[in-house]
Amino acid sequence: MRNPIPLVIVACVLGVPGSSAQTVSDPAVRLFQARSIRCEWGPGTQGKWEDGQPSLELGTFGPGATVTYDSINGQTGEARVVGNTGAFDVSVLQTPVGLTFIEVGTGLAGGLSFTTVFASTVDRDTATTAERAQRPLARSSYIGVISRHLDIAGTILPSQWHGTCRILQ
Image (cartoon, rainbow, N blue to C red):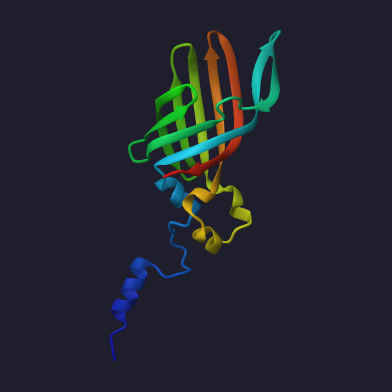
């Protein structure tokens, strides 16, 4: 009879199918391994002050509603953002919630922009783990939010927009 101990050790180290070990089909694992992500922004709000009183205006992100984050490196905290105004270096934080990109504006468009791509997908409630594992990486849409705290030539323009993000690479 063969000794079952080596088989037990291998199963413990590698995991067994159906175990709680994270796999590449796990949305969070795929997100944290991503090197390029494209987000499409839709509805949101923009704040303004008239006569010293804040007000919110509902709307959409506007022209160039697609933003790409590439060269993502969660280990060094570096990435690039590419949008309708050009490409810029940004910081990226990897947390249990997801990836958060931080852009510091300079010049006429001073301020901060924060984008969080949450580590859960839009279809998480309707798809089983097995179904998600069968999909190509690009088919899963992650929930995303961008908050911009801008001062453009003395005009304060805070805003927050909601959308979805897809892994490109």
